[in-house]
Image (cartoon, rainbow, N blue to C red; front, side, top):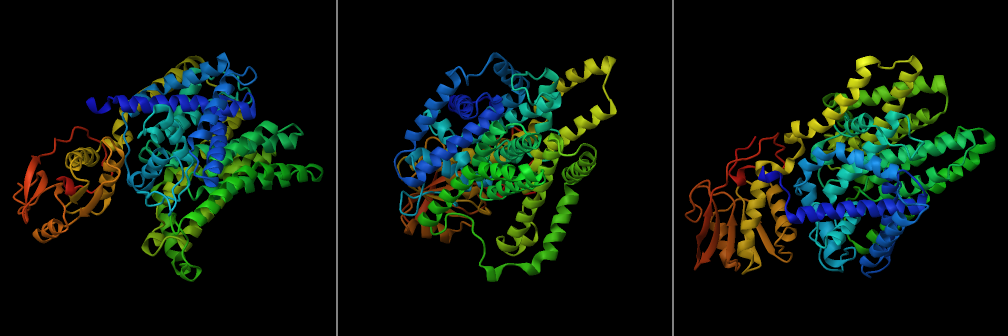
Length: 623
């Protein structure tokens, strides 16, 4: 159980996430009035990203200055009578918080995990905390593979770290979970049919259903991605909210009502979405294009104004994207993922790519059958009801799904090289970005179908269903803990232990060789990040990874002046270290001697292994 008990540093991070959430809600309420708290959260984060990014690309003046302004604005929003949260807002958020409490308890001690976290996500977040400005080729060196990648999620982490008064390693994990709770609250309102009443408090049953729809029932929910520092969760949530706000704006424009709040929320949500990942711009374009198509279907007298307003809602995101592109192109020779030269685009691979996509669709049939159901529901509903809110949302989902998949297909031709492109690398992972928008569309389609057919539970079912939903929402995190905490896999636990052992050597010498027999680069990447960014931090450590240590490589390390070497798992004949032991080696003359030996503790957490970190260099069997 000690693995599930958070440390004081982790609790400080969660405290920062909680305060940052409230401040973003306050900012969103200042900008968009009395929007629902979950909508205000996403809008406030988008506004904060706009301010912080524009400041950061314009100068190296500390980001703490605009961050403090954002915090102040958030406090004003929470206290200003016309924007302050009311009793019903607090009750709704509190109800979702209580329903989600087991999930939060399970994730309270979650630590960074997964390869991309250590390659760029955590290094980029740490750079903001350490230096207070964006990286560049002519500035302090970054330890990130992609220092020019978009920073919107890291900017949220930066605000959290300021509030926690330390680099909060769990900031992005916590913020991703809060965003999913916000999506669950919106789904709860949709399930209850109270989406137009921001003051309405979802029932306990509706809150539980919303959480289940956002997680367990959602075919796009993958714990390895969505409960980590990965950006999949934040992209999925902002895409879902953007689709919802766009649908609301289109419906109000068609009905001749004022869409100002929906358009403002849409604009700020798109600003949050556009710079989370490099491919987020495709989702922004897809949302705007889909909403624009619906606007152009309106009567001639109103379509011009509707189209202009939809385009205007995309303007802040366009400004943010162009500002970041200007910065990246002017400050990095590489720094980000880039397209192949046009002459190298892989049109010959199209049949293989299509075959790989089809195989992925079969393997993840639950998700893609749900997509097909949404498309079928859209056709049926449009024929029967015309352009109402449900039709608009389902049509926006359909448009986004088609356009985004087109963009993904393009990247396989123009970006991914060789076998990676031919295998349609991460095709399902990219499609998980559509998961919450898909659930919103299916929920509205199902809700309208139930109302149309007059299907209403009665008697014992009406009383038992909410209780069953609450029980499922409370029990599922505990029942599926092995699927939720990938950071507790044996490889991850042993890597953290090994990083702690490295700290002993780095106290006296910042140069350290990492002897990792059988590594494929995954353990070296994780150790590099943990040594630099996890306490006690050794940011300037000079690390050299050796994947096939031999007497010759050890001699070369000694000749290069390395005093210490960390051996992750010994095979016979390495500096006299017994097999299946780890060791800290110290140079002794022209040779090496072990100054510390250890065996790894038995695996204390049994879950489904992801094998994203090589097992062999950690004395674990492969496969």
